[in-house]
Amino acid sequence: MAILQIAGLTKCFGGLTAVNDVSFSVEEGEILGIIGPNGAGKTTLFSLISSFLKPTSGDVIYLGESIVGVPPHVLVQRGLVRSFQIVQTFADMDVLDVVTTAALSRRPMLEAEDYAGDVIRRVGLGGKERLTPTSLSLQDKKLLEVAKCVATEPRLILLDEVMAGLTLAETEAPLAVIRELNRQGVTVVMVEHVMPVIMRAATRIVVINFGEKIAEDTPATIVEDQRVIDAYFGELVDA
Ligand SMILES: Nc1ncnc2c1ncn2[C@@H]1O[C@H](COP(=O)(O)OP(=O)(O)OP(=O)(O)O)[C@@H](O)[C@H]1O
Ligand SMILES: [Mg+2]
Image (tube, rainbow, N blue to C red; front, side):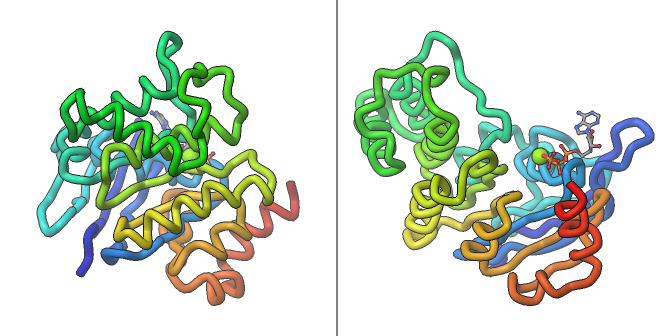
């Protein structure tokens, strides 16, 4: 069953069409990768799906119902959560507070803190509960972003470059967390620039270029697609 269907999704910012008539489906239980060059519209796409932005046109169907205009916090309660590419934290909160706040979206205070502690250990941040997020390493900040999402007990999780800036070795921990979540039944859509990671993790890949979907296939087929090579790998080679 498709947990998410995106149909003709379009977002214009003034004269710029950041997302242009994009359609695809996400099957329950899969790990779908989204790739594309900088500025291709990937984060905007996530913001449209999670209702942080309203589409100019098109529809987003989650569990069979249109969710356009449904506020993000209501979507979290229905199991749809997104991470932020720019790690967002509040200065006066520690790691446990941040994850507890996320857990409160589903659980009462008495349970939320215990549950947040479990999630923190699961993502590999055990022992860092009382640190401030700003003092964490980049890798740990990314794990915290994942922990915030996991603490809301999602059914569909949208992860925006949670591994950007990490070395290949450093991606092992977050990747293991994502795979474990997926084994437990959570559907994952992940935007990622780290190609070896997305090739290993994703069952299917959607490629976005200049706001448009230019390809959708298995990782093995995608790496051989000439349009993808031109749009994406070409950029990497030139960089
Ligand atoms: N709120 C906004 N107002 C105006 N333009 C925007 C806004 N958000 C994004 N854009 C523009 O839309 C385009 C797509 O941006 P977006 O952040 O979605 O790309 P991206 O694929 O996530 O890029 P990156 O790989 O760098 O994260 C860019 O040209 C960007 O400058
Ligand atoms: Mg982005």
